[in-house]
Length: 225
Image 1: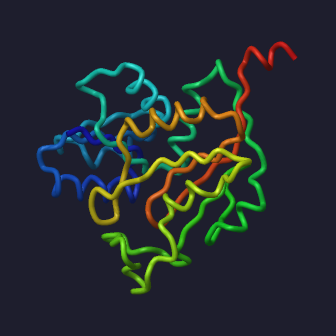
Image 2 (image 1 turned 90 degrees about the vertical axis):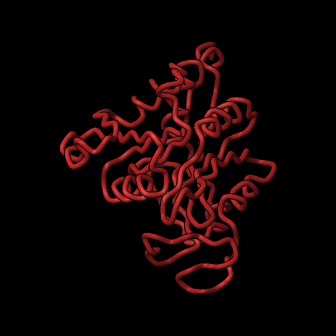
């Protein structure tokens, strides 16, 4: 098993420690644009890559090299990695236009927090979650209360007839650390380009999510206007 971790900060380091314990036979690769963040892992039998996250992810997925192709992608960088990769991968065939996040949808999200243009973060928690939360399906480990919703499932429903909701589910690989199969990212890209409506693209686990609102036009259509 190959686990590709993006970001060597707090969450990336936690993921490395966890995966070395839970998956001792796995090949671990950690990617960060700042070489000094990678230095603590030197000599630890971990593949170290100093690179921009979106650049490296694009190169790996384009090559389809069985040696480098990841089974799991773990985003621990302060960007919506799936969104940025899809945006870059479908250019220049498609023009990507971020749109203001729809207020009628934002108002239905729990604890929404604005990101950049068209981006909203959402969480069922209004507190900092425990680092090693096991995320049981039935309840919140911090409050002991039943979950009001399952975030990744809820975000699939928010688009209605006006927007096309595409959700990449982040699956917990161990307490407090999750990711998604590379195939889920490729499938999301295909769903995005097949849409005939504005898109709400999300990455979400059971508790938290990030959603980007945008629309696409084919380059040929735009150039002919």
